[in-house]
Length: 196
Image 1 (cartoon, rainbow, N blue to C red):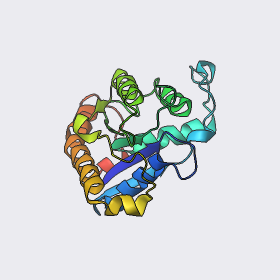
Image 2: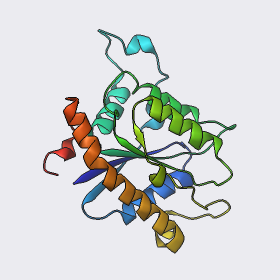
Image 3: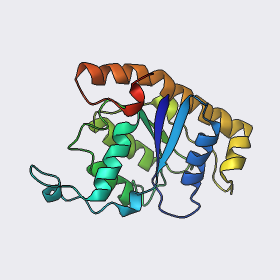
């Protein structure tokens, strides 16, 4: 079983980013489990004093790290605010920097707005700095601007579904090498790695 964790960079209810990720779950094959992390807004502001030696990170941070640790791959869809990555999403990534949960894991970045290119590039650079594998062929720009679509209608749209299927295929192809590299470095395995 392949385990993909999805993260929406928007805290807004009915966000197009969240709908896109929900569509991915609808399109995923039975051999793939797609789980959306819903606690982005519950994470406290990153504070190194709460994350250092002898410190106990907040409960919400522990839950987030566990979700990332259990995943074979991560799929993020994010809006762009003032030519940048939303603060809540960047804050979440900051909480992962000191750990090994995300290292060498494949990451896809979905961009539902063709006019918003700064945040996607910035997010990719941040993730590469964190030693993840950003999948170019798993990071499409989706033509959603001006279209009020929900998860079901996105999954039913031929063009959008094809792009999301390609993202899923890219992730599936990248996971074996990621698992092996983490194993070689004796990093903790995701729970889904036991048994394929």
